Image (cartoon, rainbow, N blue to C red):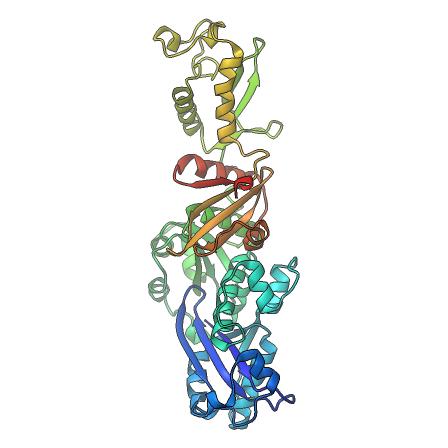
Length: 456
C-alpha cells in the first residue's frame, strides 16, 4: 500500500518551514482507496515568492486547521504505507519536522518518483514534475497546489509501476510488509484478487517472485493454483505468502508482459518460459514457372517464417482459409498433392495457376496480399486494444518490423505526437516469442485497431 502525497509550504529557512496545504492519496497499486486534502494554518508568514507560485496566501489560511488538528488523520492514512512523492526527501522531511514539533516520532518508508523516473526513463530531458508530466502526456490541473501535484504523481507512479518490468518496486513493497499484514491463509489471498485479465505474481515471505502467470480471470486462476494437486501447485501452496497483480485490460498486453517478465525475473517455479510454443510457420518461395508458392512447415532456425502457429492443425486451418479468402490455388499452397491440376480447378474454384492458365503476375498479387497481411516486416505501426478501465486504451508499438514495447494512454489524450507516444511505451525485448504472440493475436482478433505510424 502506498500513500502518494504532495505538500506546499511557507518557504523560509531550512527546517523552519510550515505546511500550508497537504494532499494524500492512499493507493493500493491499482486504485485510490482513500484520500485526504486540506489547507493548513502554518502559524507563520508565507514567503512572497511562494504566494506567487502557489496562490496560497495568509488570508486563505486564517480559518484552516492547524497541523495538530490534522495530524491524527495523516497518521491513519499513511499507516502501513510507503510514502511516495516527487522529491520525497523534501516532503518526508517536512512531515517529520511537523510531527517532531508535536513530540511525536513519525517514521515511514519512502519512494521518490524523481529517482524512479531517472532509473526507468533515463532518456527524459527533465525530471521536474511539470516537464515530466508534459512529456508523458499526463494531464495536470492546479499545478503547484497540493491536490493537483499529488494527483499527477499518482498517475506518474501508476505509469512507473507498469514500466518496472523487473518488478523491483512491488518486490520491495511486499518485502517490507509486516508479516502480520500478509494473508494468513490461501482463502484470504484469493478474496483480495480481481476477476480481471492481467498478470499475477506469486511471492514468498521475503517478497521474492516465485511464479508469474497470465490469466483472463486472475482470481479464478489463483484458485486453480491453490486447489490443484500437481507438483507445481503444491509447491506454490507451500511457499506463497501473498499475490500481487497488474490488470492489463488486453489479453495481448498480458501475454507480452508475462513473456517479458518471466525472462527478466526468472521465477523459481516457472519452467523455462514455454519456449517454442509455436512449431509451424508460413513460408514462401517462387517456383520455376514464376508463381509464389506458400507452405506450412516446421519452424527452422535457418529460414525466417512469415508468421507462426502453435501446431500444424492451426497452420493448415489458416492456409485453407487463405485459399478461400484470396482465391489461391490449393496445389501452389501445398494442400493438394496432385501432379497435374488441383481439385479446385475441376469445380471451377481455381483460376488455373496450377496448370499455367492464370498469369503469374495476376496470381502473385493475391499471394503477396496474404504475405503482406500476415507479416509486419518493415512495418511501422501501433496496435490499440482495451485498457485497464473504460477511460483508457493499451498501445503496442512496432517500428520497422521490430516490437518496441507496450503502454497505456488516457482516452482524453490523443497519441498523435510521436515523442509522447514513445515516452508512454515500456521498452521490451523483440524476439521470436513476441513475434508469435503479436501475429497470432492479430489473426484471432479482427477488432484490434491497427494504425500505421505515418497515418498518425
